[in-house]
Amino acid sequence: MADETDEVKVFRVHDEDESDAPSLADDKKDVALEEEMECKPFFDGKGAFQPLPASPAFGSMFPYSPGVMNPFQIALMSQAATAASMAANAYIALSPHFPGLPMPSSPLDMYTRALVAAASPLAGPKVGMMGGMPGMPLPSAYPPNPLAHMQMMGGYGMGGMAPSTSTSTPHTPNTTKRKRIKEEKEEHIKKPKNAYFWFMDENRKKLMIEDEWKDKQSADLNKELGQRWQSMNEQEKQPYFELAKKDKDEHNIKYPNWSARENYANSIKRKKKKDRTVEPGDGKKCRARFGMTEQDKWCKHCLRKKKCMYVRGGGADDEERASSHSAQRATDSESDLDDEPIHGTLDDDTKMVLTTNLPAIPTITPMPLTPSFSLNSLLHRQLTLP
DNA sequence: GGTCCTTTGAAGCTT
DNA sequence: AAGCTTCAAAGGACC
Image (cartoon, rainbow, N blue to C red; front, side, top):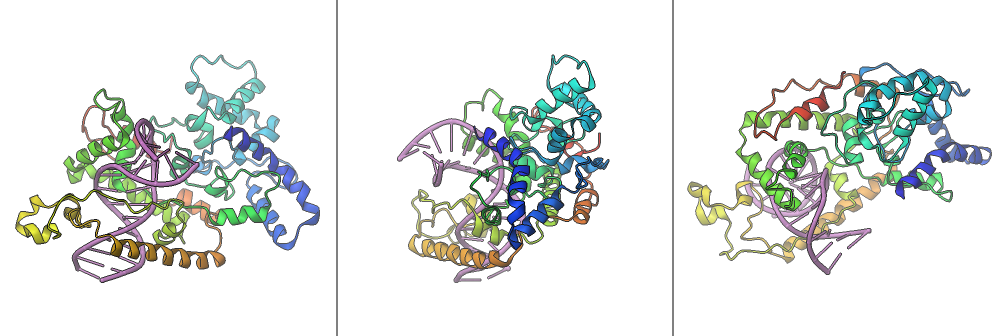
């Protein structure tokens, strides 16, 4: 259902422009100008299809959004004849994902098949046209979450399409552009994943298909993964730290104004203070109770220099501090947001830097953890050249 | 539909 | 500097 809505939105891109154009207020004109700019890489303003860049990093410019066509797909729709030859390449890339698909009888047939496959919400991120070069093999552990995929692939659609514009804000005919801008301002840019999360991302699905774990809950899986992570040595963890560093670097480039503070203030989630069960204790922290010489008796929180689980629930004090803390952050953020530009729009130069100047991920030798725990799919993910 | 659970690491605020 | 909180992902359970 949501996909259908989003698809409708795609086709409204042009309608909206036409209907609004004659009576645009100044601010709306700015918006229209921005949108025109967004389309520049694909259209020359006269309706002619522009050749697509032949950059190796081309794939990162086309993040996947469920049911939403990126400019590449829109170009395909409106420029069918010109795109036919390109779609032929796309078909070659897509065909492995559709076993049994008969060979196309003509270039137009090929184009049609590729287009249908690309536009289908069922195709999802595994379809190469969404996030990769035609002919580029897709990693087996591609994130099923479109947002995650979007972040992974660079977070932007071609032409500065912010991640925010893709999924969460279906534009009904009554939605004004001003509203849309406001919504985009309020969009939430998520934190980059840390090393452990890259490890989880890689290994969670593999663990889930193991007999012992397939019926367990997610939290149980995370416990197990946490134990496995702890049992790994630094060398084994190193590739994941490098992935985290690369993720963070890309995040810094894409969102130079982003900060964890603002992220927190804007967060959709507002987790209530957890009412954790407090084990009976004497109110002392582990350090005080056992001393530095008996760290093996410390609770895991103290070992991680976090709040001791035996003195949690101190209640009002913490609660108050936390809430005032949040309120202050929210207040700060609101004032900040009023004047700050929308995150997520890049000029072409920046995009070039983003797609070409990033440090290459170092070559990683897969570590044999267990037979089902390998880094192969991560390696595939990072090797962006066919 | 929102929250919780459960993990680790990073960031940033408070003390 | 140390301590603490929150949030990143995942998906089933629960309200």
